[in-house]
Image 1 (cartoon, rainbow, N blue to C red):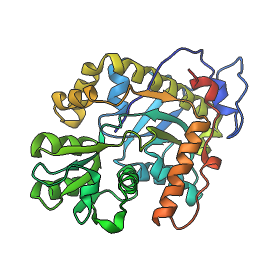
Image 2 (cartoon, one colour):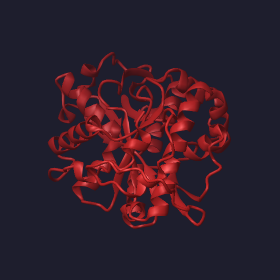
Image 3 (cartoon, rainbow, N blue to C red):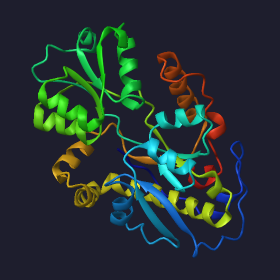
Amino acid sequence: MQNPLLTRRQWLLATAALGTASTQAAPSSTSPDMRDVTLRVGTYKGLWRPLLQASGQADTPYKIDWREFNNGVLHIEAINGDALDLGSGSEIPAVFAARQKASVRFVAVTHEDLNNQATLARKDAPIRSIADFKGKRIGYVRATTAHYYLAKQLAEAGLSFGDIDAVSLTPADGLSAFARGDLDAWAIYGYNGQLARTQYGARTIKTAVGYLSGNFPIYANPRTLDDTPRAAAIGDLLQRLQRAFAWSNSNYLAYARAQSSETRVPVGDLVELFNRRSGDYSLAAVDETVLRSHQDVADTFVKLGVLDGPAAVRPLWDRRFYTLLKS
């Protein structure tokens, strides 16, 4: 699920170690020595690691210990347990982290493809709109972006989860259920949605455009942020990812080949996803619109009963890299 924007600023690595969640840090004339730093970085198969390599951004002045986790919840759990320095995911796990007051901070956002998050109907299902979901068996992934945008789409059509036969499934189990005909429709994201379209003729009823913000937070370990050399390394890595994602928008075939070698997803499928993207990929600094969007997600999950109480997200957002990443 992802991808980010442009380069065009000087190295302000010392900024990484100085700011607070509500203020920008002042630049320093010296850069911390990162040669002895090893960053433990969470990644998804086919994303940050091959992206940096393909774009020529992998030659870092510090070591990276890549650790693969397949969802944002696991990234946050590893950070909260001090087993990871940097990770990423959607706004949803970050909402639960805010509710639980987890030991994690959100330091930047990537802007990703929202056409790749969609509500799909089986090719032979008598469904032409979300209003047709009433009484139908609809798959989704609980406490994820799919849960959120499906709720929004249902409400827009005058429906709720009580009006459908909602089935919470993992992405892999959802694909199997969809293939067997056990679901009439499915709210899903990523490669599994693409497989449903290409292998089983799924029809897109609605995408997540207009329902999701497109902001995907980058999660950081506050203990790492308190360590000057390691915080500087995070600042450098964010800039490298920013340059790499900007590069990918003009060189996607090269990136798709690197992704395919790691994921075994056919290059053609990856390129098709890219060609249908809702917008270019980017990595951006934290601003007020990001915070407002995230709070709206938290409030929606409270109304849905997914959260057991209010979650204030603002305290977990850290703006120390604002100057470094601002375009």
